Image (cartoon, rainbow, N blue to C red):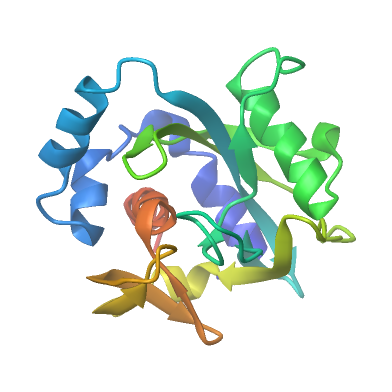
Length: 213
């Protein structure tokens, strides 16, 4: 998808209902009740935010993603959006998403143009309640991964996300050394799954609802 077409589509995002659990269920069928029960058992989840940022790459619309460094934790080596937990300096969750994007990939926080937000996603293994924000940049920034947290930066073409077979079923390795059967996006030898895939599913539905063909 060309970036100018994307700009037309995302201008309608504010008029649309957020798909929420319907989108999440396309990736993790039947998990909604499990996550809701887990959240009820954790009345004080750790708050965090991520930034799903659209960028132009040679005129084509892409979504900015990172590959996290390997570490002793449940999200080790996973593909995700730049983001992290709330810090005292953050006025709100949007500021958390902006700050984390700047810290992790070098995009100046004030250059991120806010488009909207997606449904909160609770992640039981880590106890995080994540708020995704949608941003865009009108030009490709000079991306600089933070070595301590980011192993690599990748960009997912929007046209790949909109393909009928974008999500496939298979086994993926988890951060604790086990494997899980789930739906994921396979791109550049990477598997995009879990909460990130759920958020991408929501973006996918919104983009399809704004198809102006």
